[in-house]
Image (tube, rainbow, N blue to C red; front, side, top):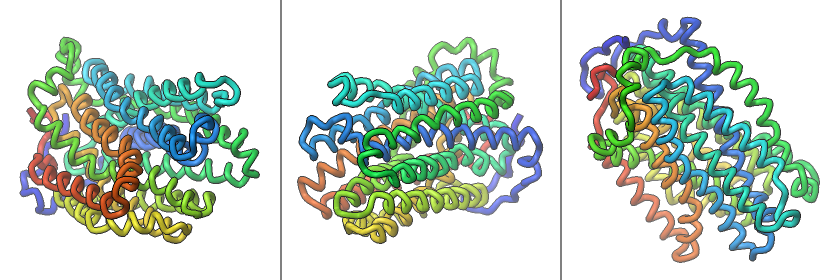
Length: 443
């Protein structure tokens, strides 16, 4: 059972015990949470970057350029829409049968879908079947990553001592910038090929590399033991037929707040990972330089995630989230202007700061969302919040941003983004602070 944390106010620092995160079992759990998440997000975010650079040319080359870009971002959105479905499906089995099994299945599904994308014929080869198959595989990716996040967070959070839950849970979130860096670096190396070779076959190599990553990830993940909190609840959990019904019946207000809070980080992801890449390259920035900048920005996000996670264990989840969101509000307009600068330097500044802020918010987010729900529905509830926000905040952000730029330009896009972030900030202060709660006592 988890140890109780001191009963303190939400902003008063608490003592942090680091020894219990250094046992061999805890190290294995944290490594599995990080590595598995990094591999899954490598696969998932590799698609995001490829959709910005190449898919409109090989899967939608029968469409006008502007429509092809929109269609390419549409397939990207399909994966994000599928993420809440994955969260519900894997959350159901994770809450009833255990966290570990859900993690293994989600990893296999993601790896296989990614490899098949790397082998997919183009529109010129098989016609309309190519984009249809691309959408199907993207949906499978979305379902898989929808299950990965909740399981990877909870397997770490539910093993960790109370005073270190925020930092432990963040290892799953650290996988996102690590996976993004690997994906961007892999595709960036591929762009060093002559343009015709990159368009023809070079872009496939990073997708095919997923087969090797899958083997490594499974080797580590199969050694992880089940969550102790779930083990104490297992017999009752097997009798629970549909956790999703309990979530909507008893916790729907919490879900709404959780989705809004998570959207703060995930709208930044949509703007920096997809929209800004396409806009910068279209405006004349060198694609290799853009991808290199994005790789370095992912490193900044990685470091900022660690900082945010460590601070949230000491000062609480809400204060750190609020600081990150306020900073994002202040940087929204500069980001939009810089992304359209047409140079690698302007893009680099925009994405480096944006992803640093994204990481600072991401650090406390996993523990914040997980501590909103009791053990019986924690996998389903936390996954629904994060993946629902992902579908809205990241999946549709590039599409909405493109539409807003067409309708009203930079001012309209920046204004809408600021308004969304303000709503996210309000939700932070309404939702419950969970730093000092015992997970077994949350009802």
